[in-house]
Length: 311
Length: 315
Image 1 (cartoon, each protein chain N blue to C red):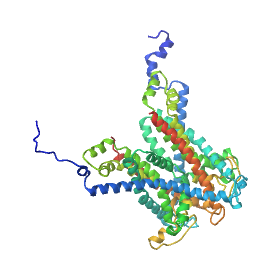
Image 2 (image 1 turned 120 degrees about the vertical axis):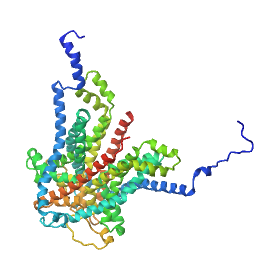
Image 3 (image 1 turned 135 degrees about the vertical axis):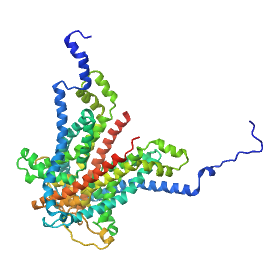
C-alpha cells in the first residue's frame, strides 16, 4: 500500500491499468501517435490524390468517345488517337507471359521445394532467383535487346512482338518462382508424409497432394505477377515497342509475331511527352490501365481470401 | 511357437520393392523436367551478365578514358561522363528516400504497434494498391501535379516543370509501400513476450515501440530501407518523364534543375533521342551503364538479404 498520494498515483491500481491499456496520458505520446497517424494519412492521401486527378481528367474523354477510344489506333492527332493497338499488344504480351513463365516458374519452384536436396547448389539457385527478382526491369530490357532483338534477329524478327513477349516472360519468371515456392512451402509436411506412408512416389505426392493444396496460393501469385508485367514499360521501350505510331495490318500469325507492336504503358509514356493537346488522352489511357490493374488485383485478393486454407 | 521347418518366408529382393519400370521411368522424367526448369534461372542470370559484360567491354575498350570524366553526358557529342548520370541517380534516390523513409516507417510502426486489426485489414490492401500503381502513371503525376504544386513554391521557376525534385518525390511515393510492408513484417515478427515484458515493467506504448520493438526489428528495418533504395536507383519511368534532360546533361546535384539518371540515360539512348542505331559508341554505352546499374542494385540487394536473414535466425 503506497504511503504518499504521489506514490499512490504512480503505483496504484489506476496507474497500472492505465499503463497496460496504453492510455496516452503525456503530451509526447500523444504527439508521437499523432505524427504516426499523420504519416499514414499522408501516404494514403497521395494515393487518393493521384486517383482523383487521374479520374477527374480522364473520365470525361472516355465518356465522350466511349468504345471508340478503346478501339482506335494510334494517331498523331489527339482527337482520333486511341489505345486499340496498345490493348491488343498488351494482351498478346500477357499471353506470352502466361504460356512461357507460368509452366517454367511453377516447375522450377516444384523442383526447388520438393525434389532438391538441401545442398550448396540449391541454396545458390535460391539466392540467384531472389536476386533476379530485385534486378531493375530495365536491365531485363537490355537482356532482351542483346539476345532477342540483336542476336536472334533472324528468328524473332528484331524489334518484334516475340522479342517483347520473351523479355516480359523472363522478367516475370523469378517472381513466379518465388511466389510458387512460398505457396508450396506453406503446405504442411504431414500431408506429404501421409502420402509417402501409403507408398506414393514423389511425383504422385506432389501431383495429388501438394499441388492441389498449394494451388490457390500459386494461382494468386501468378495473377499478381501478370498484373505487374502489365504495367511495365522500361523493358518494352528498350526491346522496341513502338513509340509514335504505326499502321500495319498483319496477315497470319507469324507476321504478327514478327511484327511491330505497342503496349498500353508504352503508349502512356509516349503520349506523356507530346504537346498538351494529348493531355486528356494520357489521363484516359491511365484510367484504362488502372481500371484493368485494380480489377486484376481485386480478383487476386478475392480468390486468395476465398480459397485460402488455414492450417 | 516353433516355425515349421518346411516353410521358408519368401525372400524379398529390391526389385520387388521398386515398383513397375514404367512408374520409375515416369518418375525420373518428371524429375528431370523440373530440374531443367530450375536450371533455367541460372541460365538467365548468366545471360544477363554475359550480354551486359560483352557490350560493356566493347564500350570501355573503344572509348577514350578521359571522356568518362569529362563534364557532361552527351552521347551525341561523344561525351560519356558517367559521374553525371550517377550523380543524377543518387540525387533522385536520396530525395526519394527522404520522402519514403518517414512515410513508410511511420506507417509501419503505426500498423504494427498502434492499429487495431480492423484498421490493419483495411489499410494493408490499400498499401498494396499503391504498390501496384505503374511507374509511368506516377511519372506523369509527378510531372503534371507534383511539380507545379509542391516543387514550384520551393524552387522558383523550375524549367517547364522538369526537375529532379519532382522525380524524387515521385520515386519516394513509389517505394513507400515497399518500405512500409517489409518494415512492418519485421516489427510484427518481434515476439509478443518482449512487448509484454516491457509493459510489465510499466513502460508506455511509445517507449515500448521505440525502445524495444524498433531496435529488435532493426535488421528488417534496415533491409527495408536498403531494398527501397535499390528500387529507387533502378526506377526508370518516373525519372524519364519528370526529370527532363533528354538531350544530355551537365553534372548537377541541384534538385530544382532537370537532371538525368542512369536509367533515364538508358531510355534516351534506346528511344533514339540520343541515337543508338548504328555503329556509334552509343549502343555499347547503353550496356555499360546497364552493367553499372546491375552491379549497384545487386550489391544493395545482397546486403539487404544479409540483414533479412539475420532477423529470421533470431526468431
